[in-house]
Length: 101
Image (cartoon, rainbow, N blue to C red; front, side):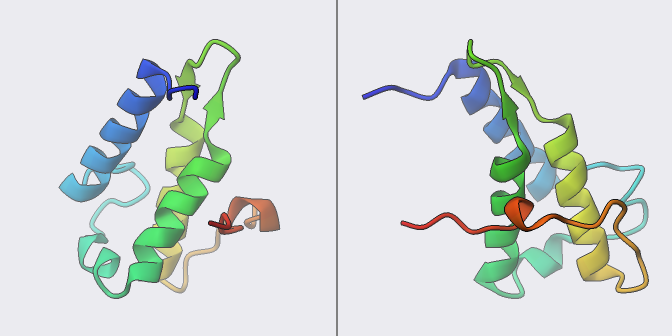
């Protein structure tokens, strides 16, 4: 069975750190403490990781470019915490599609 690349494991680890630390995309989320929203219900955190993993770019060598994935998560969190925020471009269905077990 194949293992996740070291770069992918590091990307997920850093994403989780920034998310939990309240430092995910400081520019877009300036002044918004989204962390309590992550505890509102399991589905909030579930959607955060769904968007991150659906949008995440991993090349054939296992190298990760997750800047866009983190930004899309930040947009989703901003909209969740601030209903007046307009996500541009709007989310496509594949970005928010939950994986089946």
